[in-house]
Amino acid sequence: MFKFNFSAADLDVDDFELAGGQHEGDQADELSQPLESLSVVSSPSPSTLVPTSQLDIQSRSCLQSLPQTLHFELAQIPVLNQGSGAATAIAIDTKTGNKKEIVTIYKRNLEDVKFQIAQEDDDFDNIDDDNKKESKTKDSGLGGAEMLALAGKSDLVKGVYEGGLKTWECALDLVAYLAEQKENYDGKKVLELGCGSALPGIYVLTQSNLVRVDLQDYNDQVLKLVTLPNVLLNTCLRPDQQPAQEVEEDEDRKEMAKSEGDQEGDEDEDEDEEPETDPADGDFRAVEIDLPDTEEQRLELVKKVDAHTKFIMGDWSGLVDLMAYNSEDDKYDLILTSETIYAEESHPKLFAAIKNSLKRGGKALVAAKSFYFGVGGDILSFRRLIEKDGVFNVKVVFSAQAFVRREILELTFKV
Image (tube, rainbow, N blue to C red; front, side, top):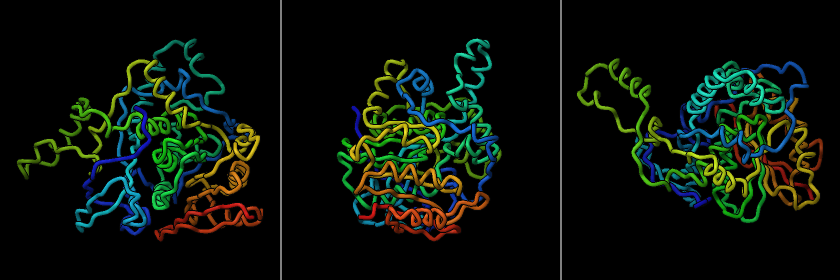
């Protein structure tokens, strides 16, 4: 059954990184890596920009990009206003014993993405040259192996790879803010720009069976390998709604765990026993879910997603032409974007996409850091661009003090 209603069991959590930035040590793991000191490579030429187009998730290419098994983890995001009733679970901070309301969202493990890309690259090397040409066209964008190589060398390659494999801090802030607002999304149209793992868009998607959430990212491989699996995990493949089943770890992971145990020594007899795996403790080795075996069964899954979600790839400059809005009703009630203003030269394109896609009476939420070291983008420059245009009212609706200040700007049309 395809359900967007979001529920989760109570979770016991060893530690938290608050979305508001109050927790000491503001950088826990890849789930919320700071986008402050970016490694950036310029694109060879403007002609390398990926053209804007809609990704057909019912295509054979997309169906085949879905792995047999998805390894996932939990994004655990504390609600800003405790007691708001917006949380999907209650967690215990074992250091203080205090209860915390959290929103939990399933997210594909990045190591699982890397493993799939490496495996598919080996398979690609073993097929003949004619089939290689058929499997990759000039319009198909980066291959998985190419993207993984770029992501390993740099967080961003301007005009080629825009960082969609990772989940950044401000995306968590945006989810926490949306959860606090508790809006009714029935009948609404929502767009997330630069979505990547798409946690804010997915949160909205889980709040109503009557909402449409469209997701845009620069690279089609990000949409196939990260965005689509995350949507599936949180809608029609929800792990907490699946029958309980035993999960066997693969031999490589068992060997790694054994090797790590041998290095620890035998100070405690219990250390020789393999510890229980618990996603709430950040141990995701045994958290996985199988997808249907056949393309026909997978097609039925993505058809359910397709009814609620459109996937758009490519540069922002072509978004409005692609969407071809004929009236205000074709536009969006809510536009979301996080960590997308890191390069000042991209501000005009992002702002134009928001301005021309937002419905009168709607709002846009832009989550960002005050400054991005090594890139040049900053929230003040983006705000000046908005104010100079004079079409929007702009105000700060969320602020977090951290090493680099984080904010959420709300944009609404002036009357």
